[in-house]
Length: 274
Image (cartoon, rainbow, N blue to C red; front, side):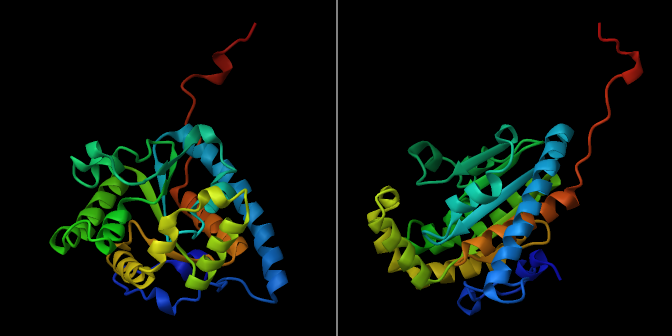
């Protein structure tokens, strides 16, 4: 069984993040240093394959790929974008970060700003946070009543079904770190002048809601992992494992999409170059 199958959440399966080892390395075997070396080699192979597949996706212009990244603060969303998707041709890749909604966005339904950011055919788009903030942050921070956010799981599933039916494949990655790892990463930001700009007071206040966020993510992943838009829970304490696992999932998804070079619109033998 490959790592994508090991980390995929089966539709209808309940998820308990507390029972999943955030330092685990499913799909790898052997002493830690051997695992790390193997993961680095395989990750590079995945990146090479992703570059070739992205070229075909861009040339074909019939399909698109949406990657959703979610996780607790410091889970590694930026690092994933840099180390996994940074190898791709920026001409065909776009990253959208979803922060606090603007006044204009709040005047529409919660999916309005999300739909506008989805990929066109030929593109790969990575969401740094996403529409899942509307069933996690909104829920934990009491920004909307339960009777509002509880209906959004169904809306999200229908929205993602629409995207898939329109030619967009979807990968949803939950970057799973534990509370101790988050503490170390926050402390690292505070002690390193090159990283301290990333620190926000909310990093501390949000930690107090760790259990509430865990419950919210358990529900979001359980209710919204579907056959057409699966969730993958990726242990992310070890960054080298995270990078390999996500590049593997992405490569396998692109291979299943099977983009092809489009046929030429002319007879090659009929063209003369003087």
